[in-house]
Amino acid sequence: MFNAYPLVISRGLAEDMRRLGVSDDGVEIMTRKSTFVAVMLENVPLRLAILLKQEALASGADFAIPGELLHLREGKYRGILFGPLPAVERTCEKMRMQPFKGRMLAEEVMEAIENSIRTPQPLRLRTGDLDFSKVRIMGILNVTPDSFSDGGRYMDVEAAVERAKRMVEEGADIVDVGGESTRPFSEPVPVEEERRRVIPVLERLLDEIDVPISVDTYKPEVAREALEMGAHMINDITGLGNPEMRKVVADFGVPAVIMHMKGTPRDMQVNPHYEDVVSEIISFLRERVRMAREDGVEHVVVDPGIGFGKRTEDNLRILRSLFSFRALGLPVLVGTSRKSFIGNVLNLPVEERLEGTLATLVISVVNGASILRVHDVKEAVRAVRMAEAVMGCMHHDGG
Image 1 (cartoon, helix red, strand yellow):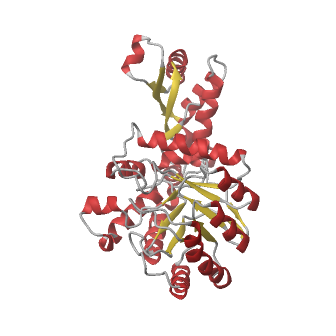
Image 2 (tube, one colour):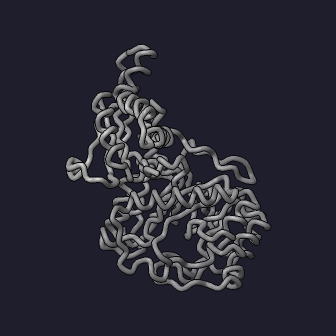
Image 3 (cartoon, helix red, strand yellow):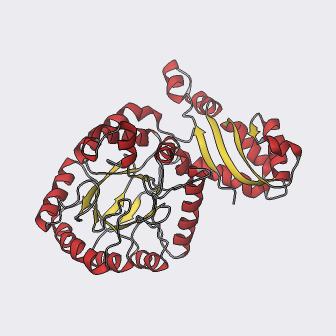
């Protein structure tokens, strides 16, 4: 209801205090005190906003509100609850006792915080669990003639299989096979044509590579056949908006990627506009996850949809605010590889966007991504593992 999501959760000072020689009990207590939290809240009614402001101040936190609320005009408001973690927790404890849905607000805030500092649950695949003790790399295998980056290179089954094998050798944890280009202004592909491209490649890959295979499709017919053959997950750019696709995924008990896209590939880049791109995408993903769960889809990955109906400034904002998406408590997939916003920033063509892509991948790791979807697997693995090594002592542990 309140679309709560974190803007900041600092890591506290645990490592610094351990180096200082602080006792274990002291580290636990003072790490919580040194952890700073800021959570965005939306749709807060006037009376509840006033109560939250009062309780936050009394607890050693605060609630930043728009100036118009001070004129006591009825309506629903956005605000930022922030302060040391214990102060925010005390605020929520008090709000649980308040009327006007105070308990619901407190529970949403604490759920957003807890989800954000917790490692997502492993994905349950047919081959076993895929955990997120490290960031996972999803290699892109486009068996299309017209994809924006590598269209036509892997249309031949043999070439596609060799490419997949190479990606696995380079460190890909998942291979994502797609038979329809979803570049801006692309036209949809008939079901039979997509089947003709994907199914022969999938048949070979299931026999010849030993990592999970994802199928990038929004067509229930293609998804069902792929899953019957043994594919491990579905990557749906339309966010499981089709009830039939939700049924297919639920029937086979496999994970699915729910992605945000404004419009369709044909029209998504025609003057896209957002009031607040992060807020709107989180709200969209919450609703689609709810729908998926109600229809029996148990394992879900969320993808904010970089480049799918977003301006350059929207894509940059999403990457800066990626940590906010962890409020959903699910693995976050990011796909920036060679995309046009990188070209716009650096004024470079597709074939010269590797360095820009690697920069966005490192930023994504720092900001909490769980899966990165890439063309250049070897380079991505090296950049990501280096970033993880530097960040080793910085992962959130709840304190």
